[in-house]
Structures are given as C-alpha cells and as structure tokens.
Image (spheres, helix red, strand yellow):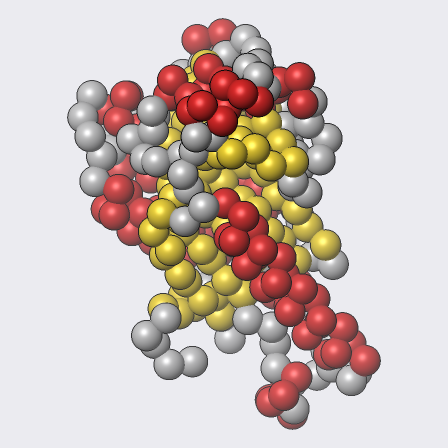
Amino acid sequence: MKPRVHFQSLGRVSYAPVWKQQEDLMHAIVQRKIARKKAGMGERDASEDPELDLPDNHLIFVEHPHVLTLGKSGDPGNVVVSQERLEALGVEYFPINRGGDITYHGPGQLVGYPILDLDQFYTDIGKYMRMLEEAIIRTCADYGLEASRIEGLTGVWVDAGQGLKARKIAALGVKCSRWVTMHGFAFNLNTDLDFFNLIVPCGINDRGVTSLAKESGRAIDEAEAANRLKTHLTDLFDWNLIFADQNR
C-alpha cells in the first residue's frame, strides 16, 4: 500500500502559524508511532487495529510574507542589516529548529513542508534531501532550465559547474526526529531577489541566488509550477496524495 500523504495549499500565510502547524502534525505522527510500538505493531498488519493505523503524512505548500529564518546551527551574523531595517521593510525574523543557516521567504516563492514518516519510505535522510532536490530539478527542466546540485552544498543550483557563477534557485533545510520530517524547501519562482541582500544566503557568501522568472525571462504561473512540482514529488516518492476534499 502506498503511503498516504494529505496535501494542503495554504496560499499566503505568515510564518509562525505554519511553523506551529508543522510542529503539531509532527508530534501527532510521533505519538502514533509510539502507540503502534507499544501495541507491538511494528511488523503487524495495521488493519488488525484501525485505531493504531499507520500515521498519515502531510505535504503543505505555502507562500510566506517577508520573513527570515535562521537554522539551529546558523550564524546570526549572516543577517547583514539591523533589526530596525528589517522592521522598516516589514521582514519578520525567526531562529528555528531546522538544519541549515539563514534564508529568506517571501512573495513569489513556493515553500514546501513535507511532514513525513520516513519509516514508510526509507530511513535515509540524505536520500530524502536528494529526492526533494530532484523534484525541483525536474520542475526547472519543465521550463527549459537546467538545474543541478553542487557537491557539499545543499540545494538546487543553476550553472552549478561554473564555479562562482553558480546561482541558487532553491534552498533546503529540514528537521528529522524519530524519522519524522518537518520544514523543507523554498523554490524561487517570481521572488524579489533584492531581499536576499539582507542576508548571506545559507551562509554562502561567494555565490548568488536566482529565480525561475529571472532565468526564464518571464513571469511564472505559480499555480502551474506548484502543480508540476507536486507531480514530480508524487512520481519520486510514490505516495498516495490525498486532497482536502477527498475521502480517505
């Protein structure tokens, strides 16, 4: 049976409530896994006890108003403007519990938060990160843009083999506890790249950032790009995507 993944597209929502939503969903999955283990259901058919069925997974797509988030191992010094300047621009700031350094979220950016029980897929966080990157790489290819990886640098890049000319088009940062994930990726579609001047993006000061719109030379239909990305994620993870109005 394919893992169930409940999909939500939230539109534009401020950062804090979506972070709380992720935390709540992650906690629920972890508690369900603990309950299954206590019931001795690790290798049993879940249908033997419907109340202890496999945990549901979740995928959230969202666009945030201007916000900076700093990973737990990040350097606050990578915010290169004052708090007063951030407030004047209407940019929120949150130190959070994902991996990675500082990043920017804002209008025109597709942010994805998979809250997945990797026990239902594979317990390999490196493979999980590469699969997220691959979905974004395939989406870029749909628009005629070649994107790829740079060894040792998480994320998706344009002109990855061109040294300092490489430009990041998508950033990734996740948290994983008991093989349950949260946080995820930020894919620049029509993003105003000037906001990245507020930070040293992901702590990397010798390479730039870009967007699908900038590389394509035209505005991107964000709903279309989201659908393409969702399709590639489904192909790669082989999950059963369930929408809000679809019965379980």
